[in-house]
Image 1 (tube, rainbow, N blue to C red):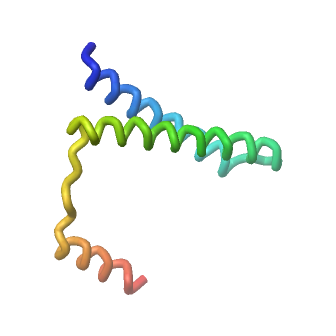
Image 2 (image 1 turned 60 degrees about the horizontal axis):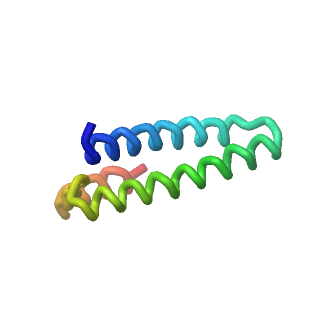
Length: 81
């Protein structure tokens, strides 16, 4: 497995972990459990950001600029709610 593939796998796994910790935080029944999940979520989000930044710097995670027309269309769609 090459470095790019390894980083992609790490990013996907970290995103999955973030999702699990988010749901754990939301569904917590006590303050201690909530704080524990929240702390783990924040650490995982920081890790995800570092992996993303590293991949982006190497050109392995390409971003596409959203078209202004599409942004305006979605914005107007939700403005009426």
